[in-house]
Length: 137
Image (cartoon, rainbow, N blue to C red):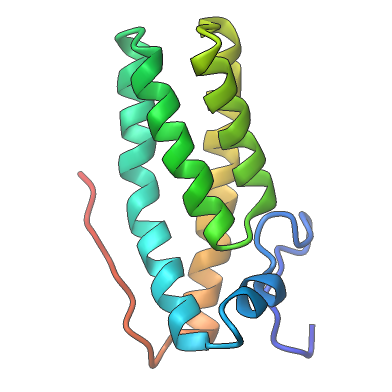
């Protein structure tokens, strides 16, 4: 870990692979920080949309929000969150409410881990960069 790459030790790079994320933006730390900040700000709203869609049994809305969550996770090289969002999206578009509910629970867990990893990124690499913060009530 002396290379400065953030990894959640118990989970490995599948939660957030900073090296891969940094490589995907050509090594531009400031740009990675902006993307990570946007991702961290957007995910709570997307999770709210998913919860609301599930409560209303609106699987089209769930599928759309899961699709956007998958894209956000992919943008920051968060493989497990991406895969969980993709599973939820597929369940929603297959109109399988029970499977969607299970996939949603997994996505919530993965997003929680991703938030921790992105917070670590912010504290270690993004101190001098612009970081988007949106309050969610």
